[in-house]
Each structure stands twice: as structure tokens, then as C-alpha cells.
Image (cartoon, rainbow, N blue to C red; front, side, top):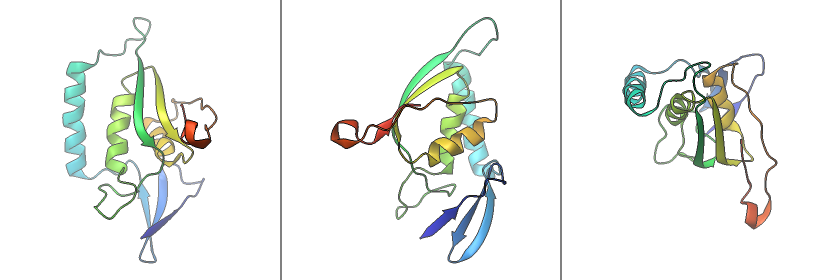
Amino acid sequence: MHRVAQNQNLKNKFYIYLQDKQVLMNIHDIPSNIQTELHQLNQDLDQKIPLRKVDKNLLIATWNIRAFGDLTRKWKSTDNDTPKRDLHSIQCIAQILKRFDIVAIQEVKANLRALRDTLKILGSHWSLILTDVNRGDAGNGERMA
């Protein structure tokens, strides 16, 4: 079990407490095996998604990312971790999102940890607009970003 504390003064960094040991991580310090996977993903995306061209095209995407909310702040989650979405997943999501000019994401939960970390990866030139959380059974505690 771990708990995470945030420090607003440490951009792109967060603390993880593992068995009462404090560890500072940077979301951009990607392990080499994951860097290799991200490189392969980007090569595949190069073949499937048109290049963004300023003043030539506008690439718009919509993506329903199931239960896009909390995040296990590890590079690879284990069978015992909840939620299963981890930093590796967020890096993959960011690699896809950065290919577009405008993106609408459905199923963003009230907990914005995964979305916030995705924005850290994308960089300061990205911004967002959020709808209110739809409470109750009909809304499933979700919003759009």
C-alpha cells in the first residue's frame, strides 16, 4: 500500500511513500524498456495518424477512456494494485493525444489524477475545459474534458 502527496512547487514531480520511505519521482524519467515501447507506439502512430500541419489542417479526436480518473503512480502496476492504470498507460495516452489539435475525452471521473499527470506529460502549451461531474446513477460520476 502506498500513499501519494503532491507538492505544487515541484512541477512534473510527485512523492511516493513506499513502506514509509519517501521517494521523489519525475513523470519524465521514463525507464528504458518503456521508452522503447513508446518509440514503437510512435512509429505505429506515424503510419496511422496524419501529421499536424500549422495553417494546413486541424486534427480533432474524441476518445472514451474508460474510468479515466485515479492512477497507480508506478511505471507498471501489479495484480494487487488498484487502479490498474499506471504511469506507462498515461505515457501511451499522452503520445496519442499529442498527435491532435483538439481532443474530447469522455468518462473523466471526479478524481483528476490521471488527467493531471497526462497534462504534465503533454506540457504547458496544452490546456483543458472540463464539464461538471454528473452525479448519480445516470451520470456515473463522470465528466468530459
